[in-house]
Structures are given as C-alpha cells and as structure tokens.
Length: 467
Image (tube, rainbow, N blue to C red):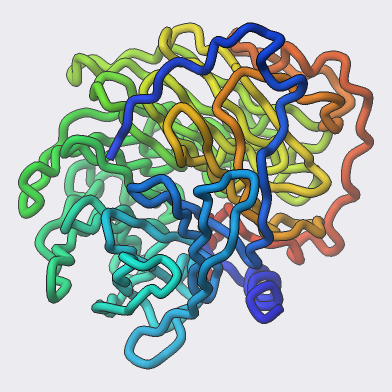
C-alpha cells in the first residue's frame, strides 16, 4: 500500500502534471466476432501510470510512482506481474515516477515528474530478463523529468526548469556512461514565448519516429524537429491551435487548463506524413469550453501542415478539472492506419485513420466507476493492445491496473453512462454515434475544498503542477 498512499498523498502537491504497421482490424464475419467488445484480461498494478511494451510484445513496463513494474502479457487473458522495483539515484529514492521507456533490453526510468522532489534524473536497467531487471547506470539532473523516450542508444528528455526559464528537449547518449550530447529549445526558436507563463509553454512529452521528434509545447503548439544529428537538432515545422498574440489575452486558468492549445502528447506515423496531437484540457468557461480531443494533421509538406480532422472527447455533465468524470484525451499509440487512444474515465478507443479526414471509430470500451486510462499501447500488432488504469484521479476510488484488449471491431454491451446531456459534435467526427441512447448520469459531487484533488494532469504556478 506504500505506493498508493504516496500517490494520493503527494498528488495534492504535484506541481506539474519502433513502429510496426498494423494490418486492418479483423474483418471476419459478424458471427465470428466477439458478441461484445470487452477486455481480454486485467491485473492489479498499484500506483500505475505510463505503460510501454517491449520489442517482443510480451512484456509491459509500468511506472509506479516510486519505481516500476514488469508484466508478462504473452497470454493476454492472464497478464501476470513479474517484478516490482523501487528506484534509487545516488543512493536516494527516486519518487513521483510517472514515465518509463524501453527499447531492446534497455529500460529507462525517469523522474520526478514534478519539481518538488529530489533526487532528479534517470536510471537505466537491463531488462533482458524482465523478471529480474538489473540496474546499469544513472544520471542525476538539476531539473525534473516529466516524460522521456528511448530510441536505440539515445534518450530524449523533456527539460523544463522554471528557475532558469527553460523549456527544451535534452538528448543523452545512454550507451555506456550516460552523456548529454544535444538540445533544442522553443525559447531559442521563438523568444516571444518567454512572455507567457512557464506552464503555458511547457514541453510535456516527446516521441521520435524515423529521426523526427514530435514535441508538444502546450499552447505554443507541437514542433517537429529533425534529430538525425542529435548534437544539432533542426526545426522542421509546427502546428498550433492558438497563437502567442491570442494567448497574451488569456488568463492563467484558461491558458493552463483550457482550450485552445494544451498540446499534451503527439506522434508522427510511420510514413512521416500524418501527425496526431492530443490536447488535454477541461472546461474552464473559456472558448471552447470542453475537454480536449485528438487532432490529425497532414504534414507531408512540412512548409504547409494541414488540419484534416478532430476526434472529439466523450462528454460528461461536469467537465471541470475538479468536478465530474475526466474524459479528456491522454496518451495514445499511432500504428499504421490505426489510432489506439486513452481518455481517462472516458475509456479506450480504436480508430481507423486510413482516411485522416474521416476517422472511423472501430471500438470503444469504458467503465468510469472502475477505470481511468492513462495510456493505450499496442502489444501484439493486429491482435492485442494494453491500457494502464490509474487511481490518481480526483474524487475517485479507482485501483491501479493493467488491462489487455483485442484489436478488432466491436461494441461494448450495456456501456456505463458518462453523461446526461447530448454531446456536441463540433468537428463532425463519430464519437457520439453509439452513445446517444445511454441513460443519464448525475455526475460526481464537487471536490471538497477544491484543492484536495490530485493535480495529476494539470499545472499551476511556481509550485508548479504538470500532468
């Protein structure tokens, strides 16, 4: 119970918050499909946050706030915890760990996700035997690490430091002694963003595909950067849902919690021509006043990115950060012509994005009273994906867990209700289609005292909260 207690106790003070092409979702005759779309399996993982999958598709690795867990998912009907490890840097416990990354036999654990903890840095593990991970090397930093990604011998890290006013991508060589070898800074590229709040231009995450790093810089937009020479990254293009000028007229709460903007996670597909940007947001009485979804952009011409469509979030009655169910976009996996997405209590979804202008929802599963999904990641291409459910959502009593799901078309039988009101469908996508007949839901009561809720995915000022 130590991790769970730490997760909930620390969250009130949280200050911030190789691609394989997947074949088409199975098109077997209706009689051969599942009668109802449901998870294949589940295993409890206390304090679960981000989850990633090893190259063999048989092992999942989860951040667990004070360490990480390895889970055997080779039998998706019976996922099994293999090992749980606490992590140290310099002999001190690394805490507030929300992210891990794996490539080959190397796992990187990074943290803390927020700045109010020490030590700070990364720890590498040899996971050639996932049941017995072995610590290999460590690197202490002077900044917290909210997210990172490992590609071969290179580690790409989101470097945010309010004292030095830094929002940058840091690149490390982790082959042998961990060495910093390069960086790229939004503020060097566009100095005008220094005028905006630190958390309004926060580099939240990083993904890398074929030497292109996708960098979601919250309201500044998502930047694509060429990292083929990691010692000298170069700007390629960017997309943005708002502008610096517009942001100068927006208050702090809208700038940090609400749309437009809030670029939270981004990835480029394996063709390099399609960019997906997830926007994590809540209702703030701003405009638009709703949770954030996922936007698809054609970046085949880097000089002229084109917005193709949006996948809207599920809707609820109270969509504020501290009020009702959380249904905003969180992390996702973009594989071939499929998008696997997580929406906290809004569940997990599969979309066919072979036509980016008209994404088609293929499957949707949710259980808002029991799950709040942090991520969705492909395990066995064409067969299964995993999704980690976190207990760290305000006003809930969820249990950390890892779920496995089939990659196929399907409809959930008797899905639990999310809302009373009819959702809007501003972008013309399909995410309201099968939900129209769901019976009403009265919603959660507001959090007592407001500030007691986990500042899990949002940020506030110099105490600094980030998701």
